[in-house]
Image (cartoon, rainbow, N blue to C red; front, side):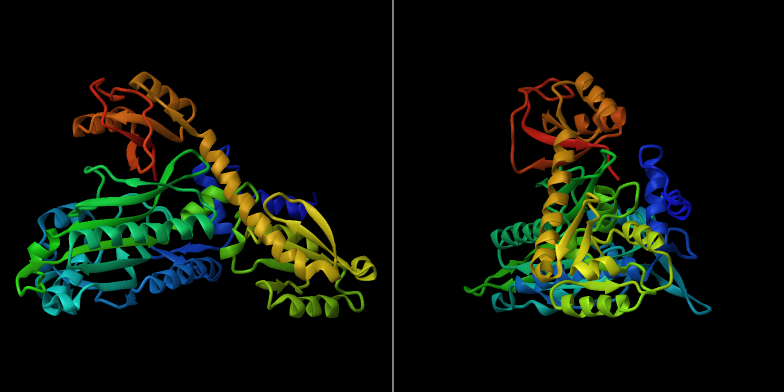
Length: 479
C-alpha cells in the first residue's frame, strides 16, 4: 500500500480497538456530518443527506402507497396543550426545550419546541373529526424535532433530528390495530430490503412502550459491536388520547364514539444503524438500493489520449441503468480508490488504456474487495446483477453476525456470562413482572428490547426470579 493510501486509512480508528471512536471517525471522514454550534446538533453534509434522501424517498413512496397524505404541523406547542395527556407529558418532560421569550418580551405561556407532535394532531382531530365519514384520517409529516439529550452522538442521539411521524385516527380499535401492524410492516420492508439490515419484530414491554400508548410495536437491529438499536416504532394509542382531547365522532347510528389513534416513526437514527451494521475499518459500506452513487468510474492513466472520452462515454451508457458517476479529477487513482471505499460506494469501475484495448473494465466490489474483469458488451447486464448480489450479501452477512451474537439464558448467571463474553441479543423467559425487568437492567445495564412475535420457550421459568414464565423477551445493551 502506498504512503498516501496508508495515511488515508489511518484516519479511521480500528473498530476492534475503540468502536465509539471508529464510529465518530467514519462519520467525519466519510463527510456525513459536521457538528453544529449548539451542543448535540449536527450539520448533515451533502453526502450524508443524499443517503438520507434515498431512504426518505423510498419510505415516503410506501407511506403514500398505503393511503396516507403528507402534512406540515407547527414547530411550537403551547405548554397547556402538551400537558393535556398526563402520561405523555411525563414521558417527554425531561427532554423538552422551552421558548420563554418572543423578542424582548417574556411569554405569558411557555412554548415547547416540538419533541413529537401527538398533541398537535390530537388538537386538530378534535376540531376536524365529526362523523364516521371523516374517518380514517391518515396523515404523515416529515419534520425535525428537538429532544434535549444529556449524551449526544451524531445520528444515534442528537438534540435535533429529522424524521417522519405518522398520525392516524380510526373509527374502531381494530382498525387502529391493523394500521399499527401495517406500518410496522412498511418499516420492515424498508430496513431489510433497502438498508439490508435484518430486524426482530415485536412488542415493547409496558415499561419501554411510548408514553401514553396502549402498546408499542418495534423493529430491533443488532450493531457490529453487539449492541441493539431500536430502528423504528409503531404505536397503538387506543382511545386514550381521544378521551384526553375529546376526539369524538357520530357513528352510523348517530351515537357519539371516541376515535382510536396510532402514530409511527423512523428517524435519521437509522443512519447510525447503517454505519454500524455494514461499516468496516475502511469506512462506510452502503447497500446499493439506497446508495446515492452505485458505481464510480475511476479512469486509469487518464492523461493518455482517449481514456477520458471512453470513461465519459461509459458513464452516459450506464446512467439510465444505475446511479453512476465519474471522478475525472487530477488526484491519483490510489487516493480515489480510498476515497470511494471510505464513502462505501458499492462498485468501483476501473478503466485504463489496456482495458480499452481489450474492450473491458474492472469491477471492484466494496463489500468483499473482489475484482472482476467484464467485457464492455456484457457490462449492462453484469453491473445491475452485481449490485443485487452485493445487496443480498450485505443482508446475509448482517444476519449471520446477528445469529452468532444471539444466545439463550435460563438464569441470571447465564445471562450475565453471555452478556459479558458475547454481548448481542439474549433470549430469556420473563414472568411479566416490572420488578424483574428493572432488576435485570440494574444488575446488567441490559434492557428488554421486545417481546418477539415469534415466540419460543427456552425455559419454563423467569430468568430473573425463577417463577413461572409468561413469554420470551429479547434483551440487550442498546444505543
